[in-house]
View 1 (tube, helix red, strand yellow):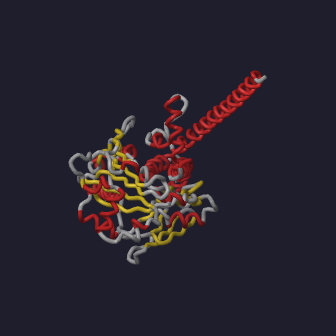
View 2 (tube, rainbow, N blue to C red):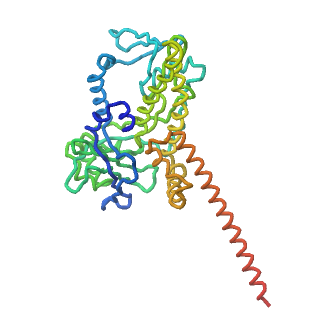
View 3 (tube, rainbow, N blue to C red):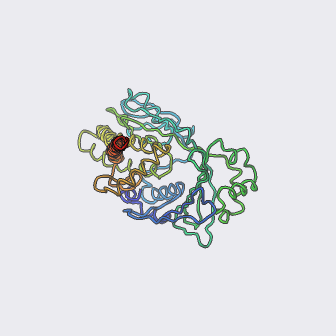
Length: 413
């Protein structure tokens, strides 16, 4: 995100409202009441900076008002309820009667999850702009609630705090807390939708207090009294499903074009900040693609050529992003074991094996397709090595047994 916002010229404005995170403190399920283990961040090209999504939106809206008020008009509480397309041009209808329909030759569909524009465009794209939803891992199905925390003496304001209650990933309750500019923390509590402790059995402030004392006692000194009742009153929120648009991310004709960006084309769960970061990358790529399209044809052809170039550059990236994110939501074999293997092999032979996928995705030099391709290559080589070692061990064991059998037979009378 930092690199993209630098290119867009608004990183300095956003940075003022960010907090640096330079490590994490973890508690294992066996040590929920003990001291957490701190891991300092190292080896990163850029420090991790966090900002609440609503604050980021506010900063960007102010940047628009300060620098692009003549080019951009923002209409609040207005939704596109339907869209029709003819030769690439779009007719957009508003949810507010007083807002007139918009007949546009170029549209950027950034209307997020379950995008109305993507749905309408996919119907007339002859299968070129389709939406794929990956199957959910039902064992890892989670919902969440948030709670505000206040830092106390001895607690660092530059760490990601993480704790999990439960021996297995399935059915566990997880707490992830990140610092805010005001000096507090925002904690997200992730849990199974069927966990009665956080749903039907949670009704009062006392219920919340008892819950945290049971699951995360180390955090109870950080919870303001008023937050207990607020947490109990909140309804759980769901996480988005893994979806992507492909193979095209645009609809174009001789009268205009529509391009799709952000959550409208790649929806992931917000575990690693990949959603908003990749949305900014979409915008940067769209900018370069439109410049490319401007090199040929008339103004309307510029839109079509630029949109086509954008799909070529980002279509496969959207698919790779969602597929890898789905693996991060997997079980031990899909998520944990690959991280363990990558950690072992990259330390033994760093010139041959790359770091794990999460570390690679933190490096802006890699595209999502490059990370996915490299990890597939690493996994194939790792499996080959492990199979070869297993075969050799089996052969050695058989040889040893044959040798011992022959030795015993030779010494028998």
